[in-house]
Structures are given as structure tokens and as C-alpha cells.
Amino acid sequence: MADEERKPPRTKTIKLELKVDPDKAGGEYANICMVNHSDSEFVIDTFFLQPGRPQAGMKHRVIMAPKNAKRLMLSLADQVKRYEDRFGPIDVGKPGPSVDVVH
Image 1 (cartoon, rainbow, N blue to C red):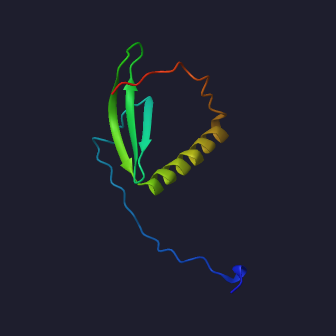
Image 2 (image 1 turned 45 degrees about the vertical axis):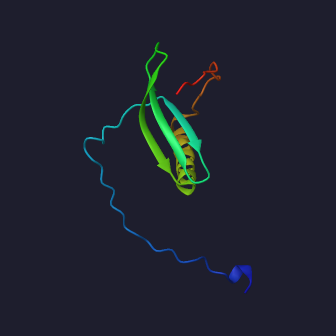
């Protein structure tokens, strides 16, 4: 069978209802993110660093499979593009000073 004649595999559509706990719907602010990975998972830790303080408190840890981490990356890239198309480029500024992270 020629490549042009091959049909893409059928995918099953699933209706998914996402429920959000009202206590979590407000979200929490984080201004630092640290990402690590192993061969089987990605770990994303978020922190809030108050101005003028040398210590940041961890807010959340999200652990996900590599495929889901890639999906998150692609989704964020798409959302950043949409944001910049609407509001203009995001200026991330110059790199800040190097920081030694102590656990």
C-alpha cells in the first residue's frame, strides 16, 4: 500500500469532565519554578520568593510522565504564542545573577 493510501489510525473520542475543588480554584502565586527529571518522570516544583528575602517557600510539586511533560510544554508554547499575538512580545529581560540553591 502506498503512503498516500494509508489512513491515519482511528482515535476514540472520550468526553472528560474536569472538576475543580472550589478551595483550589483561586490558585496560588509562584514566581520560581524548578524542573528535574529521571528516565521515567518529570518533577516540577513551584515556589514563591518574597522581595528582599533569601528564602523561597515551596507551593506545589507536580510529577508527570515524560509524554505528559511534553504535552504541557507544547500547550504552554501555544498559549505563549497566543498571548504574544494578542498583547505583544513578552520581555524576559537579561539573565539575573547566578544563585546557589540550597535544599
